View: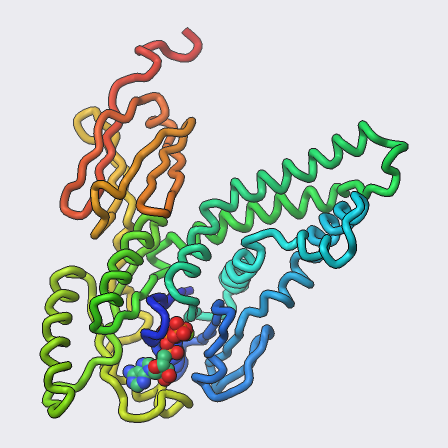
Amino acid sequence: MRIIIYTGKGGVGKTSVAAATALRAARMGYRTLLMSTDAAHSVSDSLEMTLSGTITKVEDNLDAIEVDMLHELETRWKEIQKFISDFLMSQGMDGITSKEMAVLPGMELMSALFYVEDFHKRNSYDVIIMDTAPTGETLRLLSFPEVSEWYTDRLYGMVKNMLRVARFTVGKMMTMPLPSEELMKDIEILGGRMQEVQKILTDPQITSVRLVVNPEKMVINETKRAFTYMCLYNLTVDCLVVNRLIPEGSNGFFKDKLEEQHKYMDIINDSFNPLKILKAYQLPLELVGLPSLEKLGDMVFGDIDPTTHFSVDKPMDIYSRDGMDIISLKLPFAMKEAVNLYMAGDNLLVEVGQYRRSIALPTTFTRKEPSKAEFKEGRLLIMFEGDKHGGTRKGK
Ligand SMILES: Nc1ncnc2c1ncn2[C@@H]1O[C@H](COP(=O)(O)OP(=O)(O)OP(=O)(O)O)[C@@H](O)[C@H]1O
Ligand SMILES: [Mg+2]
């Protein structure tokens, strides 16, 4: 199965390009699903048809779904949510507030990712094209599997604590619900499934992220940052789609714009090299409905199969050289000053700006000390050396 995730700054054309890609893939014979995880759901407008939280057939080989978070909360999360809300009510909170409080942050994000895992397991589609919300929200979504371990641990801990409290106060709080075995199992399963999602998302043979950009300064800058953060989360960006280009030869008001565009195209080419760059021009018609999406798809891909892996480079690489263990992390555009590294137990925390990733170190690393870190050709190299325990071995 192939998963292609489109992301980028607000309004750059993510939804249009995602829909055009899906249409083209379907018409080439791939069983395709176009999935929107953006709460603003504009895929229906783009396809000019009504979609919902259940799968709708668009045409042969093409299905679409707009993940409905509310529906998800009421179905997938029913047990956990009910338990937490019952607990809060037993503590004197009123019904409505306790229901609201029981919606843990990130639940809706997890739901969207569970779809991906579900379809992958069932091999329902050859290709899933994901249309996402603007960059910040999408990063939250894609970094989620990374933090989910922490999350499920917390949930697990919280439920366990409730059990403990309940035991101590039996008699006084007979109305308090006790977590069932099933609930504890549910939480464990949840953690396991998130790990599966993580595997799928970080396998470049399956998943690629594509950045949509316009030839404008602020958009380019945000796209650079997005690229860095995708790498931080070990996601493979396989191409850049420059959308809404003014056609060459335009004159009048567009002449100046065109000059500016040349300048920005140079910046894009220089900055993102060797990333594959695809282009789409501003169409003179409203981009809604299948015929116009087909035109957009033709423009972006020409003769190229839209499911092509333009890159299968993994941003993170771990290897040994000259007695040193090295973690090499591709971090294009990351400023040295914005990067902080910390050790937390057997985890290495890499912080870039406001985003942070915790890398679980392989066991060979945990016996060594981090000795130095340096930037080389857009990669952050972190070296581990020596023996933390001064050569003493276990069992000695
Ligand atoms: N190449 C193009 N030619 C003409 N119109 C375009 C083109 N690309 C996008 N548009 C139009 O620009 C608007 C924004 O596009 P779209 O909704 O695809 O962007 P988006 O990145 O998904 O936005 P959001 O961040 O709000 O989700 C739409 O009205 C769309 O029809
Ligand atoms: Mg959109």
